[in-house]
Length: 258
Image (cartoon, rainbow, N blue to C red):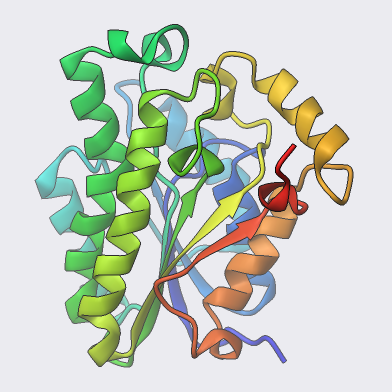
């Protein structure tokens, strides 16, 4: 039986109730995990208040800002975990960003700044956070991130995010190889397209969703809760033999040739 009681789980990347990270947080809470939530602070504190209100029913015991482009905030986040929890069992990495200008038009027009920013936030941040989590996973642990089919196949307008997801998936494999001897497992879920704040920046996202609904074996796309269920499984002892994997949760779309 899936049970995460007694497990400390840090969830990143919740923006609103459409976020995949929100679906994951809900299912981890349902399985009994003790949650910590990070948010991206803004000058007026609007995001902090919005996310705090959303996650209140989950009763998180830790709520901290964490901008992965700020080394000091990453350090502070994991110092807080050490001081308050003593150990970390689960790290959920749901962080990705590319400028809207980089998510339409010709890929060759990607700017140097846009390329660097997308790779830093969407891929390198997993490396940073895993390094910070490693000494706190004293009883083993599970690190989970989110990918997408655009990291292995060309998806219209996904552009630089495809490169970032490809890098992210190799990060999963290298981290799994490094951290395995400490019984820390590292995996990714590659979900089907879901309407989220992040995906809305991709040109033609609704057409992509409709296409999946027509072609995928289940004739639909997936929900945040379905991804959350898979995340809870991968973070539990039921998945104790799984690491370094990219698990597709996309209603079967990935298997189709046409």
